[in-house]
Length: 171
Image (tube, rainbow, N blue to C red):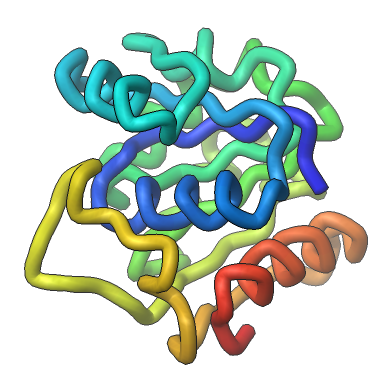
């Protein structure tokens, strides 16, 4: 489904979704950016990612899907850091629990919300956190809410929907 997926953040949600993509063979290459070198090393050691990057801009180069899986309060700064390196056809999605401030941040950074941005929110979680807490079945039988904007590309929304459905989620 995707040639290269870049995760920005590998906590419970990001690492669980990366496990799904790996298990279901939905991505040729999976890379990630994290503030923690230890997280990136662990993720590589367990075969979750193919490469890790300290800088988000390096991770998103050549990605056809970018998953924003860091705290919502970091959205604007992360989007600013990747603005020049994310491709014009790259699908962007997030897993944050709020949408208004995420969409507003995207509009501020890009001048308008990119046509391939598909806001999302998986209603799933655990009391555990971190890359090792992730589980490929975390999203099974849980809801995922996608909130595309009126101008969001239908094919981008459809691909993100198929990804979540492959995770066992009800979209």
